[in-house]
Image (tube, rainbow over the protein chains, first blue to last red):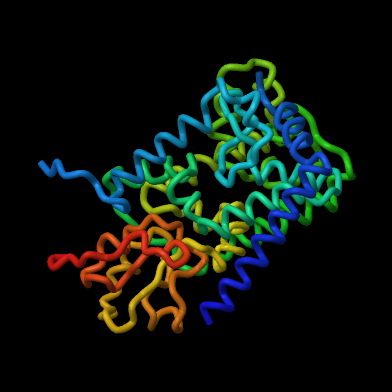
Length: 42
Length: 301
């Protein structure tokens, strides 16, 4: 049971790291910043 | 007076970390760097002093231009897998505000457990489905989302978010005449929602987190697979239900109440249950295989 849990957590973490890397590669972080600056009241 | 060093899980310790988070996430000087980052806390990035980007606002912004937010899914998912909803309990500025309000002496009431499911409906409808369907593939600019004046602003930021209203909306309405002039009925309805949420926080602990926070709902989806978790020792647990009574989110913690599972997705890892557990070793907080905190037992609890 515990082994299975570790297996799922491992794969889930790897998938999420891949998504994060892909998002950064696709310019998501830049869009987040642009959007934040767009909304910011200054 | 007790002058011993507070242990992890005592609310004094948690309050200090929440205070530091409040200062870091609203430290104006960090804003130019930090707004690249989505941190899983509800802190409005429309506020000039806000230093990080709000995940809910960012997901809506991606939805409006019909783009999948891989970066945000990755950040929130990794935070949930590593620490569950500990960010809600230990770092969220709006959660901290509610914790402070709950300290006001008043009549107290607990939201029914059924209210917990409302936040999932808000997540699906106002954060994902409606922005994608009605946004028209076009991003909104400047004050539109906070004042809710845009015709397409049928999203969580434009209709509900009390954190945005408290941190950006109300200060802007007070200090900026131009924004005050553009305020619509939606703006004032959001101020009303904020007043209700703050009033409810005085009488019902973490009521907003439980019923209305779409970020909490998002974190809850993957927190079941978290490395940081609560575990009960079924042999030591006496089913006194003390943990359920002190839980701010009405989590089902005791084995009999959860059908064999440990703390549910609602748990924000405040650790009040571990601190108040009357049985030594019955409740434990673990990170992976390592025990972070073990209930010591309180004879008079």
